[in-house]
Length: 221
Ligand code: FES
Image 1 (cartoon, rainbow, N blue to C red):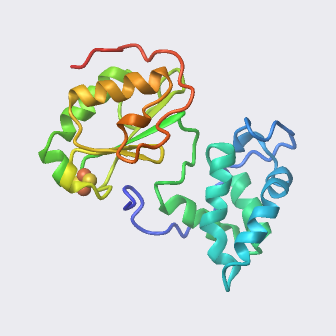
Image 2 (cartoon, rainbow, N blue to C red; image 1 turned 90 degrees about the vertical axis):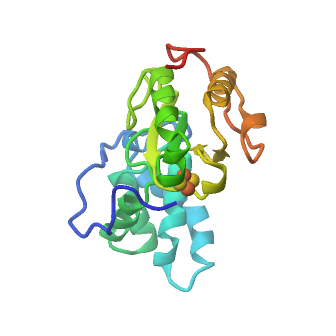
C-alpha cells in the first residue's frame, strides 16, 4: 500500500511523543504510551533477536520490530522507537523515519477495527465517495476519526490493489471489494455483532468480539 500523507522519510529530530514515565502496566492490554522503554525492550527482545538473525544488518529488522510492537500495544510511539533503536543498536531517528513513512504504522491509538477505504481513481469512479458517506454516517465520525466507543477508525487511503473489484476497503488485515451500500451495511452489522469473516475477500477473521453500537445501525444516507 502506498503511503498517503508522508511522501518522504522524515529527517527531522525525533519528536518527544513517548511517555517514558516509569509506569509499569499490563503488557497485552496497555497502550505503548503507558509503557516504559525498559518494558518494551523486555517484551520485544526475544522475537526481535530472532528477526535480526534473518538479515545481514540489524537495521533491516526495524520494520518487523515495529510490526511486533504495534501488534502488542496497538500503536507505536516514542517509547517504542527508543526501545527498538536500543535493541537494534541503530539511531532512534531511523526507527521514527520508518514508522512515520508507512501508513500501516499507527502512531496514535486506533479503534478495534481500522477501516481503510480506498478513494483512488478506480474506487472513486465506482462509488468510493458514496461508500465514504455511508461509513461516516453509520459510524458517526469523519474520515480520520475514531468512533466514541473506540470500535472503529476510518481512514482514506491510496490504491490497495483491488482496482478490478472496486470500490474496495480493508478492515484490519482483511480486504473487502465490490462494495455497495447493502454489503457495507452487512459488514458493519457483522463487525458490530462480532464477525465479518464470511464477507471478507479472504474469508478472514474480520472482527473479533465487537460489542456495542455506533449510533446509526441499519441506516445509510
Ligand atoms: S483504486 Fe481503489 S483499489 Fe485501486
